[in-house]
Length: 192
Image 1 (cartoon, rainbow, N blue to C red):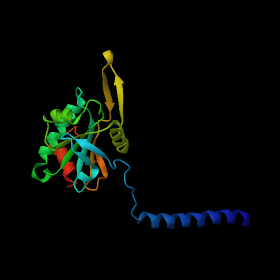
Image 2 (cartoon, rainbow, N blue to C red):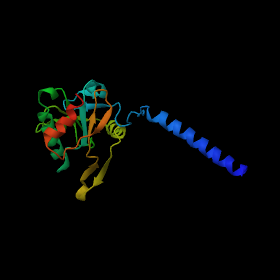
Image 3 (cartoon, rainbow, N blue to C red):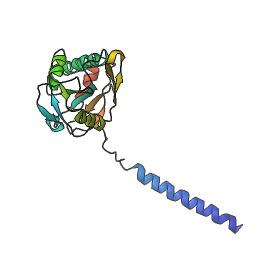
């Protein structure tokens, strides 16, 4: 009978230690790491000026990857972003949205400037060398791929997510544009 009591005693002691450890751990805040989305970049804006991630530090901003020859997703998303920027009202006057091309071959600063003239002026077009653009796409954990079409033309597959970045340049989440602009703007306003 003694032999049976020893395993039972060890089990009960183990259970007690586990219970004490769990109760101590439940009272502690859980540390969360910084997201690995985003990072340093150096690109060229639609005015031909070199800009970097540091130019947008200190204030929240949005980031969207796309290209000027996009037939539907990009112009629709840029219009939705424009609507959100307007819905932010005066408190959002310093909020920028970065439109980073995934097609630097065709998206020169001049092409970006002409394309973005139809949208809110707070949307900044960014392009650069294929290597600089690829590094930015990678830093944001985005995706892009050139897809050949008939007669030598091509299109681009790409991530269609709108990233919300806080004033420290840290990824906060993705912006849900499938709702009224005022509701999406409220989500951005929480970062102001």
